[in-house]
Length: 301
Image (cartoon, rainbow, N blue to C red; front, side):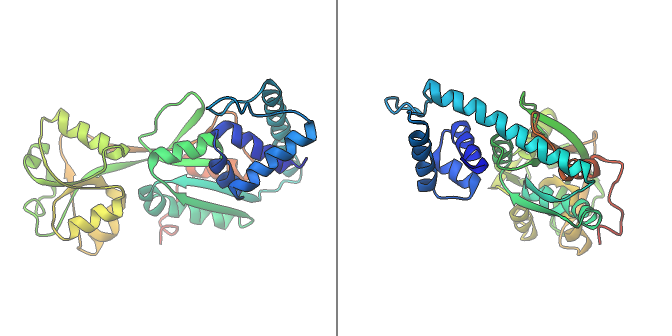
């Protein structure tokens, strides 16, 4: 048995899905089924209880899972310790994040990290917020970058930045000439928003609810880039993170107005599984993101 077979099996047990286990390991669903069959032949026992409608391990299968997880943990620990002994920071880091963070917050950090650690390959996957959490919990990525982080008993949450929420409008919008606006100024205006399950949408809904402001919702989208395109045709205004409209404001495509009545911030955080062994590369990336080494203005160019 190879170590990769152990990982595929553990992924199958944790996701209870042949298709998801296949995706996590870059193989076909048929290959996962064949590996399971080969294991049952090798150990001469049933691993999955096929009399049950739901995915369920036999007692023997549960024992294999517990043992394989420990083998994988020791294997990862060995790799980490060997790298530390050789003072090596290399390998691959798998990231999952939402568009707004990946396109507008991550680049300066990533640029600096790649300059300091050229032997590390960072792979970024763009996902909806709920899928970022799922990917981290299932182990398909090493780290997730999220806004308005949710607490979870299996996740470590590490804050790394805050972004101000502002009103974004078309240059010809009725509020565009104001440097700042009161929340009451938004009453009855046509609004473009994120879809309801997106954390920033939940936060903006709460801001408007507390201010007793009712807006006219005209469009909903699942990513910030589409929201911005709708504002550019003057279909409505939106409350967005300031960093996501910086370029458009600089090119006079959009206008940014400060929201009066409090500090409206969007907290950003790194998430990873609490029991995950962090390689030297992952630890170095987290340390850079955490704060003291904030990317310089030269990094952002």
